[in-house]
Image (cartoon, rainbow, N blue to C red):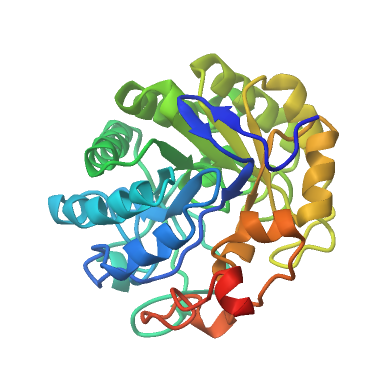
Length: 361
């Protein structure tokens, strides 16, 4: 079986190892959602990953409600992404843009209007806003007539990602955001062609991925899904019934790879007793399968040895360990990240974590 340090072909992208950097929201863009120069340092420091999946990046003003997160719907954003991508490529890395529509997981004070979703539902708890945390609001259902406009937003963001120099794109279909809100039955109460049966609930996901693949190429398109358990209030009563058909649809499109976020009962950032669906998904999907959530060197290699995973994406370990692949290869201890700086706007806790040889010196 392959090791974490063996190369892998992820569609059109050749990755020199199977240690991928998972998307991590870090909040270092401007209030207008324009990337900043410090992001070039951050991503290029982590270019040793087999592939970097960028932080979730908004496809539109409607879909981006996280303060200081980057976007890809304006020319100014595209131009600001270019030096970031050039820095990654200059350091020998590869990077794809994760395309984000948050659906109901936003607040009107950030996006300037009522949140949208599959149905008129509301997330429990509070949203991050520029004025601090505020209670989530009830979303309005997207009208069927609005779906073509939404697909246009994804296509525009994809074109912009390619223009900025990204090596491909990943559709964010996980973590309780818009596509997940259409996929899972506790959030999707529609009675039209986008609701009800699993075939209808996967329709938006399929149409989005097809549209993105038309622009970027299927072999430079991927998607992240979270099939097991509650994620920001979004859940399903029968995950296998909806996610196996979803994966078969993705297989038919011919995407470059599929990433699954699957927390377990002892998860450190979300937990669930709902069994992982990856073994069944492995049977339905023949392309590269990337697993995520609470992996370290031993269980990551075990996932590859089992034949279920082809690669592993690591999230939080990359925050404090910019050279994570080298640390895993050498067996060095991992540095600890500083949680209060996850979403702050400065260099602290962002670009000041030293590489292993610097730390040892």
